[in-house]
Length: 268
Image (cartoon, rainbow, N blue to C red; front, side, top):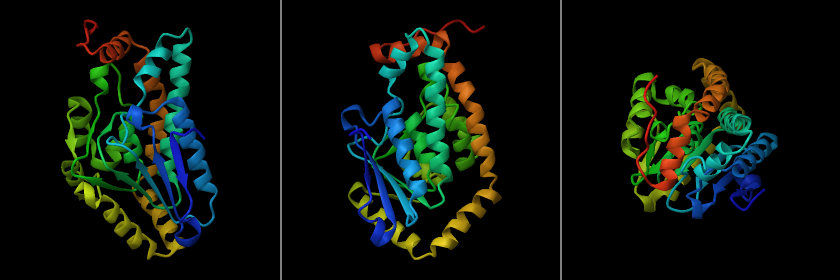
């Protein structure tokens, strides 16, 4: 596992809690292929831990996650086999989200700051979200010439199709309190109260029976047709890869990295 992800199991034996921490602070915790591989390995380990009762995902630094590493994406775009690499990255990202989403125990996202693009998927795949009022989420993919295809099923599942469409198409910042009112959030607090708010939520969860909590999560997913979310996310791999192979995707990424307005192709 790279230094970009820490897995803290010190509370596993005493409380059944494991915490994953994104710590690629210098790049705003942007997701590279290696960091996604680290996350996948960590979630697979969580799946095998018999004493696990709650899993927490948090991040160091001012930004929770800035989404995919666009420098790495551009490098892949310029490679001779770019489409195959994009397909592989989309598959990897989808597997991280779906495995975290389907983890048998309750999962909590502890959001201290902004969450952008692919980072939003990590939050949406969590069962509960505790965030500071300084946090916000944004899905700017169309501004970069691509689409938040794999994120979309999780967003629709959490907040409904109408609100999801507005957030996906407008690309505006959604404040933590507005996101919580829409259904994406368990608690919203001042930055200095984040640790205490998460601790309070964990204490509440841990009063429940491990077997009852696991059965409740399974039944909740069955009643809400969560299986369809996984199927839709897997279908979205192709959509994501296709979107990244367009001329507008190449222009959007180049414009972002060069800090200039994009020049889009005429509509066909």
